[in-house]
Image 1 (cartoon, rainbow, N blue to C red):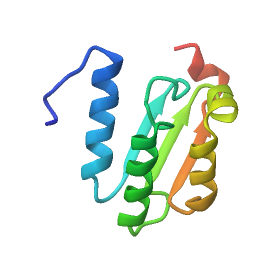
Image 2 (spheres, rainbow, N blue to C red):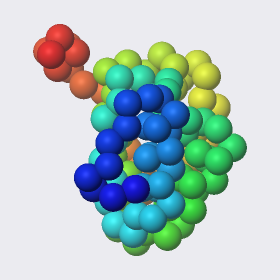
Image 3 (cartoon, helix red, strand yellow):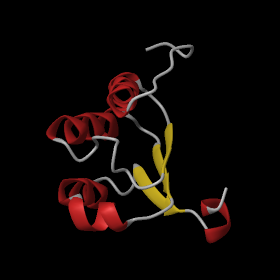
Image 4 (cartoon, helix red, strand yellow):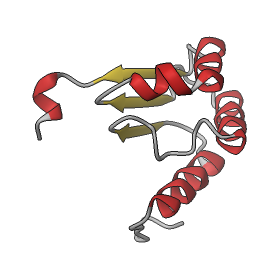
Length: 102
């Protein structure tokens, strides 16, 4: 995927995110309301995240901003395990109420 390519389906979104994770060598910033449609909890998503965290050298190379953490906390045990292993490479932040209304 190049910078000019767009997507308009969740499958396209997952493919673009997977492509970025597979190629990135520095920092990635992701905003998603809740991670539900990202595919990051899938076996492939976890493998891509783990490889990225092992490949990069800077701290907090993956920054994720969410409106809600319900899905992450309830349905993403592999992603939570990865966050505990690579907390120095990944961070998840929750937006304030004001940003959720935009």
